Length: 365
Figure 1: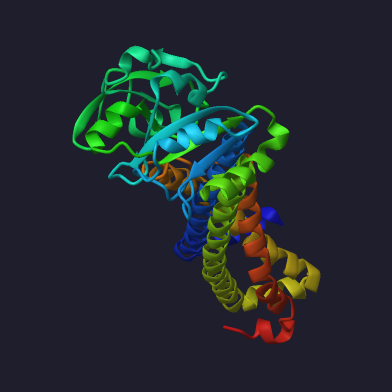
Figure 2: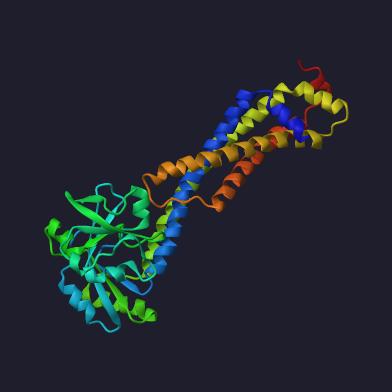
């Protein structure tokens, strides 16, 4: 019966092509938006692992996502060192570039290694060292490098000044800053000696929450642990995922109406054919299966087309947002979405076809 279903689909190529296009656009839109949430989840996982045992100290009322510029006094650095259980502290000054997606972080040159982490190595060039204290140099993470197509030797404009990229971190690096520069050089062009925040490394990971609460209550600042940051990231990801599925639901409704319309028109045009099939022995179940098969094939073709289109959509999104990801899970969702959509919205038209009276249908012109 599948070969008959395929032949029937070629009867009205334009109408069926438009139905397939409607399904494909819905699937592509859904997957493209959900890819942002998937990418954020991957980033959250990597970020959480790298921030275990780290407390981020920020001005009261601020968070890592909203804090830029200088607002903390350098006196806080010495205060942090005096807390029991603190291993070391890393003051930083950060700004968001005009593209609103790239974060520049200035850190002391003798703490760059700690900020990058032991597991991440330089892929090309060299690390910032103590001789670069006042130099306008930078190292970049793999995400920024791929996103901006920037390599060692290139210049990055920061507040109207050119910083030379002297090092590129290996794949998989996702530090707190897309671009890392000497803090003195960044504060000099920003004309400030204030800090954006302070990273505090504790000697005992088990005491991270306890020390964070102690810092918060004693100094009246915000002290966020990796758990706090991951939770906030997860909340953002969940909201984006929810909105993606809402948009997908609207697309499903539009695509579903298109499928139902196509199937109802097909039933109306083929009433005489249905009558002949019943006259030569076709049962209601056979008619029902015939029309369901045609709808499922439409959904399958639309789903595959949508998945292909979603790769283009994700590529376009990646030019604006660095954290997007296509996964096998998303491909499965796309196929399931299109097949489920075509099945649900074709059940009633198929049932209507199965109920057609053979005698009345044979008289239909």
